[in-house]
Image 1 (cartoon, one colour):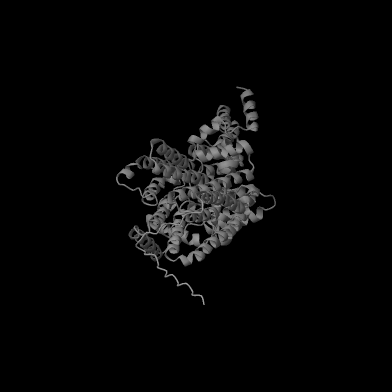
Image 2 (cartoon, rainbow, N blue to C red; image 1 turned 30 degrees about the horizontal axis):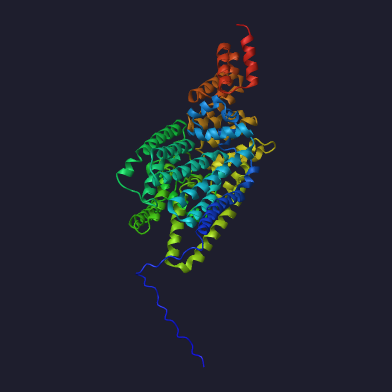
Length: 585
């Protein structure tokens, strides 16, 4: 009879004694695995962006901003000429000084012309590169692969970012984000091994980002946050002094942006209390849109009926989260870094200085959302560390949310196919959206046979917003085109009373007056007023050149035609000018 061997007593390891780590089967295997993931994740980001946005290669330009930036901008549409590049360095385009963005539009026109598909494709490329750079920077700074990947995939796929990518005029968003994340990556390299050369790289990339879109003025504040987490190199006052040049550039850029917007009439005179209430509600509203991105639109009418108690609740929520972030700094520094990233990067566009007439905009969340997703990603990682059994559930939730974003973003991008689908969507998902009605009416007015439909939308815009200069100007344009000159003049004059310094309205009223021979002098007065507001208004110069010969003022006509040709060459104008010069002296 054989005896069984006595069982060996298993002694659990002493938690106080450090246990040796299990050795990898081969050192090269770990390196190859890490390299494989470092290449697979960026490739996945690029493919996921293409899955959502490849459709935009077949989309049109839209009638908002695209004509100003590209299709009707002679400096852009003629490509990268020395004169055009010099113009871009000084020009204010749609109330923005964005020379790097304008260079990018010129470059696309230089190589591909005015083909909307290629302009859309360039936006998609920069968005994909920005997502890859976000992953590269975050994973290098934190050494946390999967949380970094989650943040990058949400950035790449979230429906709130569709506006920034599918709208050609928002090249400034994707381009500034590209330089922003590239500058952050350069900053991590600088933090690892400081040197003047690496510092200069960060500064140069930041300046390029500012010249793509001045919203990046909060970049120095972000660097201070990153010094605290994840870089853990905050040593006051040294790291603060290190940021002084960045703050100086931010100040200069802020001043330039403010005066550019003010000179263009974009800064709205809104009571401080009202703008503060709207800002508080926007902070909360953006968070809601991040988790439930439904009813997205190109334009959200400004909210004028926010109750004090609503703003107070929003303030209490923001203050409560902020206090928690401060007190939880030691245990969860990522929470504070993400939260104050979100609050800080939204400051330039939150509406404390109201630019434009929208209450908020999807595109404003392009960079700020990164802060909120950092909070989610590293919070989830904390949950997994504390309860390892939750790993599968957390990973599944992350994958499901990314897939859901991909599906919703694909559907949202479809609304950007053309101006009509875009504005009809905005009318459908918002209330009293006079801006969408006005834009849709203006778009339909240029399509043969759709005049009555255009008129109904323009009239709706005037009903919804009787104090909108744009709505009256748009309806007046339709009335003028359909022969209702007296009614058109009445609406132009109303628009001018609402916005007396608008060069285009002066010009339009001048056109209406010029149709009546008895009101030629009134037309001249309006064209001259348009030039006082905008001396670079080529069409106003041209129209004065046409009218002055009727008044016996041939020399002045020649002068205005010459000015029009300098600003925007036109073969027909050149023929008229030659005829005037050859006439009797």
